[in-house]
Amino acid sequence: MKHYVDSMAGSPVNPVQMSLLMRVYYLRNATMQTLAQHMETDRTTTTRNVDVLVRDGFLEIAEGKDRRQRLVRLTERGHEALEVSIPKWRKAQDELKNALGDECGTISCAKPGR
Image (cartoon, rainbow, N blue to C red; front, side, top):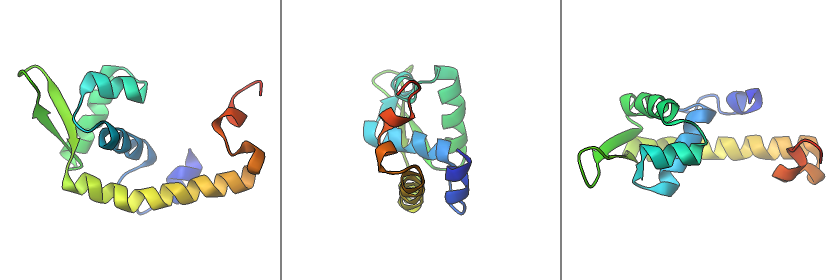
């Protein structure tokens, strides 16, 4: 993780926040529950992380079909943050792949017992 943090220096978001922004981008108008499932975290943690990104202007919350449903979506600032952060993330990925060798270029290489 430190490698990603260092590689993303100067980005408007940290690696964890970028991951959340990416999920929101791909899911479009996601509910908190759906976003939590995709982030593989509990809803409380997801809500706390989303609230920080809302406060900082990267995400916004809209009402869903009824007033109880909250939909999360990117703001213009969130899109801009991804445009700045994605190239740095990809560079960090490439550096790790090169350091580990081609045989570790897949996620299965990192799993225990393989």
